[in-house]
Length: 129
Image 1 (cartoon, rainbow, N blue to C red):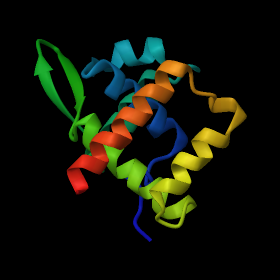
Image 2: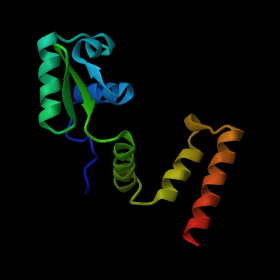
Image 3: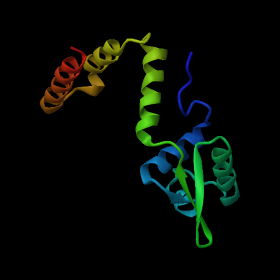
């Protein structure tokens, strides 16, 4: 089974990565203010070093600060995560994912979203024919 792009991360590391992806780049002090529950400064910096060692982020120096940024583009991470989700929970069937979304009361689509999905399906059909 293929592993997801962030599967080797702890819950806290995933929280940090979500924020890094949202912001594009961030300092430890900025991150500390955003995280839902506080960490000591040294613990946060240790986790940033671990994420860097695991190859998820890098840093550059700006003045006296380290600015952290993701190694992979969010589009690639989304693609890998979606592939992992489809393979793991839907037996490799993209249509099962679509059916699950359409049949889930929590994810009711608006008329505009239905139109967009229909357009995307038509465009995808044209590309495969």
